[in-house]
Length: 311
Image 1 (cartoon, rainbow, N blue to C red):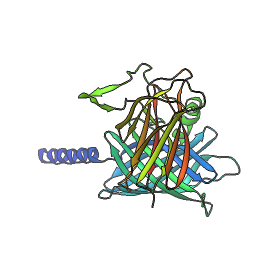
Image 2 (image 1 turned 135 degrees about the horizontal axis):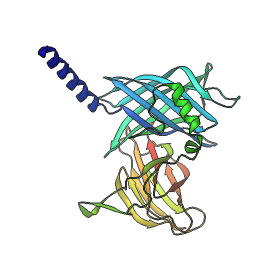
Image 3 (image 1 turned 120 degrees about the vertical axis):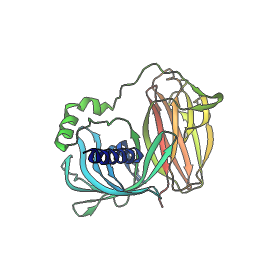
Image 4 (image 1 turned 90 degrees about the vertical axis):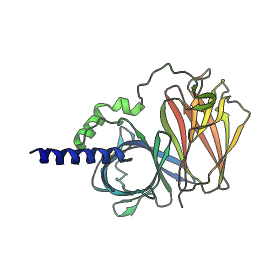
């Protein structure tokens, strides 16, 4: 009896340690997008991942609002050496879509990246819808951040997940999360020269693929100049601290040396200006192209733009 208990204890300890060592198990939230010459479209995207060794299972939930969503099961693998994650949706799609649209069964080719305590899965996707490729002329991108709690309640059955979505339509259509309203403007660590972003929700507002080794960024206030002040962090490292947005450009460059990894550009609101929230226009110049991105942040969320490399 004691021997059996000892074996069970060792097995439980091994499983617990193995579970703690897994980096992907849990809840991921962000954006799934399609980018064309005509513009950029992005849906909210949630992924719940379960893992045994290299094997991954779970489900995805893509939604733009309460009138349009698609939920799929998926399976896949992670290569722990290269940090490459390959996932494939399968089976029946639980969805609510306009009559003119069909669900898209997706494949994901992702890379795991970590900046301090923030973990990302970024990369590309493709899909099939009734034997036809989904958005064949578009650049299909995805960026997900690992979060502590799911956006949707932690239920493992698809019917309950969908029912929960409809019972909370107002909450999810506004995409609000409860945070403290009073947060100190600057957090200092060790000494005044080392700054880190405040603990706020990360709101991924744009995903771009870049092949250049350097990215040029220019920031302006958006529309009416109302005193918006921001700090900018790249991969959690400070670039600009408490700079006011105006019609005069704030310009800096970002090196992109490790093409396999993502880059997180984070804009932190230091005030809300005279007209809340804190808004700005970001001009991105890379690969001989110019992208204009409108960014919005406040005391509850950071504006985040993800740059990723897709060969």
